[in-house]
Every structure is written in C-alpha cells, then in structure tokens.
Image 1: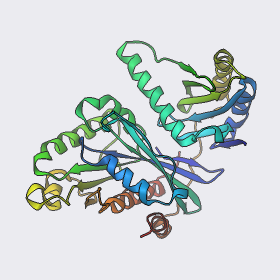
Image 2: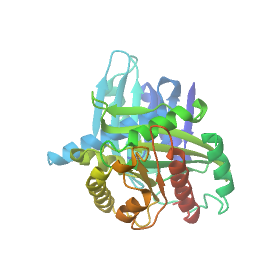
Image 3: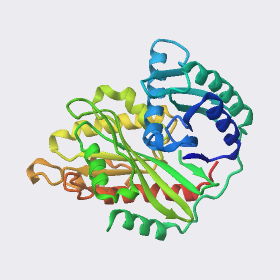
Image 4: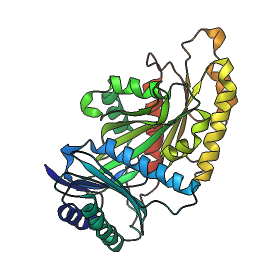
Length: 156
Length: 199
C-alpha cells in the first residue's frame, strides 16, 4: 500500500514527486541518527524502522571513512541487486543534515533514481523552513500514563 | 534528539546501551525482545561478528503506547563494547536522548567499566553533549554471579555513579533488573522532553 507519513507537511510534495518520477518503490527521509522524518511508497516492501537505522549507520560509517581519506563526504551510495536496488545519500538542509534511502525495483535504474534525487534534495532545501516555533510536547503530569504504558508493555 | 511529529502526534526517542565488552548490553535487548508482546516491538537487528560480538550495533524499536496524547516510540541501540570499535561507538551514540550504562559487576572488570565510562564522557563531549544533563542510568549487571566474584551495588555506585543518577543491580540473563532499568531511563527521557519545549 502506498502511504505518506511525514513529521512536517512541507516535505510531502517533494518526497511524493521523487518517488513517482524516479519510479522508486519507497523513499525514506531521516535524520543522521536514523529517525524517520518522512516516508512515501510501498512500506510493506521493507521494515522501515530497521532500514532507517541501518541506512543511517551506513551513511555515518562511509562519512567517517571519507574523513580518514581526507575526502569531502561521499554524497551518494548505490547498490543494485537482482530484484531491488537502494540509493543512500546525505544532504544538507537549513535544519541540518538529512539522509535519504530510496528502494527501487527493476522498473527503474540507479541513474534515474540519482537524477531525481538531486532534484529532490534541492526541493527539500528550498521548502525546508529554518526554524519552527517551540511547542509543548508532554504535559508535566505524564508520569501516571507513562507508568501505565510501561506496565502494559512489561506486563508488570 | 527526540523526534516529535505534531501531525500524527508521535514521539520517537533514542536510547543507547553503553558499556564495556561482554557487560550484557545485547543480552538486555534480547531479554526485552523476548518479553515484550510482538505487537509492541519491531524486528531486532544485530550487526555482529561470526562469534556474536557486536560489530556495529543492535537495534530494537519499541512502542510504549500513548502518553499525554502522543504515541510514544523508543529505539533501543547497543554499542560495540570492545575498545577498538570506538569509531562506530561514536556513530551509534549520535543523537541519543538517553544512555543506559551497563557495567559488569565482576571485581576483575572494574577497570574496564571505568575506562568505558570515561570513554562515554569523552565521546559525549566530542558531540557537545553535557553528560550532566543527559538522562543516564547505571545498570550493574551480573549480580547473579557468586558473591565473591562481584562488587555490591553500593561499591559500584561509589566507584562510578558520581552524579547519583538512578542505578540498578541486574542479571540480564534472567531478566532481573532489565525492565527496571528501561523504565527508569524512559521516565528520565520523557521527563526531560516535558520540561523543554520541542524545537
């Protein structure tokens, strides 16, 4: 099932355009720590949380290898398998660095995905607001609900 | 840093299990994975060597349920404890909202615990994180071993827990102290989130 999930609405349009135009199955936009900011595509194609954690780790570790080689950060990593390929890339935005993981099938190519990724990263940079007004997240008296949730989770 | 989605009202927090090699970080996650209902957890991913030592990290996503109207999710990570994996340890630590320091209670492992704790502080400082403000919990694992082999919790607190943060004796193989530790760090992370407005 094609599904859009986004923490911020400004990312939805560029992400959907990227997936459609590149012929990708799924694209994730995440923080360098592997937390998913947005996702669009066939989410059943892959375990999203695990893929995000692994993708962020690959980008982080290749970035460190680049540092060891005194190279600028490697921008894009492509792997093409028999049935699926992945593109992994980091790019800077006004809100800091972000990481994109795109999964594509035989109906697309690494070149096509990379071409539209360049456009996507530009669109995200343009659409991304620098700051967001602070919002209250949790009520101060959240402990009771936390304890109930943890008890349910741990069956204590 | 916690990720807050105000549209879908979701919070995602990252908790890192840190500590010396073979202190029981992966065992903590395995126990949690085994005990938590399947619908409340995702797939556990382990990047390990052929001898089952952690090479990069273990990863376990958990769904805590709804708190203050927010669906709250935790992502648990372990770091590789072995000294020569410091580069990957730094990467896993990046963006952590809270840390569980899993110490090995065995008397002969005290120096390794202190070295790992010092390494945690250095790596946090490098990422400009003040260890005094980061939610931190100590777990003194392997308390189930014979008494003559392990240090009691009070002595381990004296040796490592300078800030007086929550600490727990544990035996991760049997699960003793595992959930208490996770409960405590969860509370600290969410309390910190409730005290500071999200950017």
